[in-house]
Amino acid sequence: MTFRSIAHAALLAWVVTLACAAQAQDVSFRASVVDLSNRRSVQLLYREPIAQPLRYRVIVIPGSGCTGMGPVANRYFAGLLHAQVVVLHKPGVDANAGLSPDKCPPDFVQSDSLSRWLEDARWVLRNDAKARAAEPPVPQLLVGISEGAELLVKLAAEVPHLAGLVLLSGSGLDPSEAGALQAQRLGHGQAWQNLAHAQAANTPDNRAAEGRSLRYWRDLWAWRQSDALIASEWPILRVWGDADELVPQLAYDTFTQRAQTRAAPLCSRALPGADHGLQAGARDGVQLVWVWLERWGRKATGNLCDAAFPY
Image 1 (tube, rainbow, N blue to C red):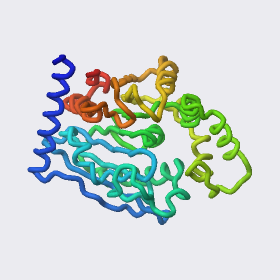
Image 2: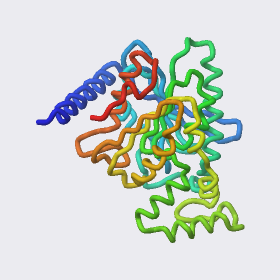
Image 3: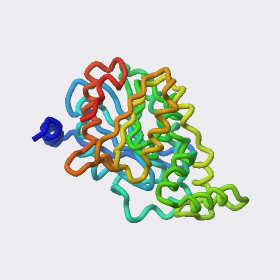
């Protein structure tokens, strides 16, 4: 058995122990609904630390589609031992829908867009910060999963005591550029160009194209995050699988090259053999990331790169 496999076996045993401890203490996620001023609502999942003391707080923005993390949250976030965890879903998404549900709410396609998602997430985080203003300060991390990572730099100003951004399977490139690279990799360059023309045409926002509304695609084409991430003051931990089927390696490499002049720390970790969900057979890359965050959380000082290293 190699050192790497021994280390990973120890990691999995540690995660299982944590999950069992959480179950024994009944430290589990609770769902709640936040009614927004714009007549929409957002569903949250919330969990106190599994073990005391509370060292840091993690705010999670899940990925694309209508994924609801309720059914998997206790297991998925088990490795965040000393963290208070908040999962902020997309507007209109059922927190208990599960991963990649077969059916989304009837109006989901028409309501789904990055700008609406951002507007509602800002409202929630702004009011959350006000509600916690009298509490002792706790370092906070913003974690974005896949498409959720595209909101992080635009949400950062709403999070007091922000200590860093964590991008899981998010390249950091503007989504239209990352999408073009993926289309080229799959040999769908012409289809991507057709979609580019469709979103630029003078047609109604509610027109459907490739399973989304033109409103969604217009938001995506106009969305900018790359330059802001590079210029931002916060440490960034970016983790992906080198067998990612949804985001090409070139997208990750391109952002890394552009960010070489970044003043704040950037650490990039490609997990061998892992897919878009950071899974590689029996190796669970998500739990590895939580190990890094726990290591950082013992001090909650310095940058995330000090605690993160490959397995």
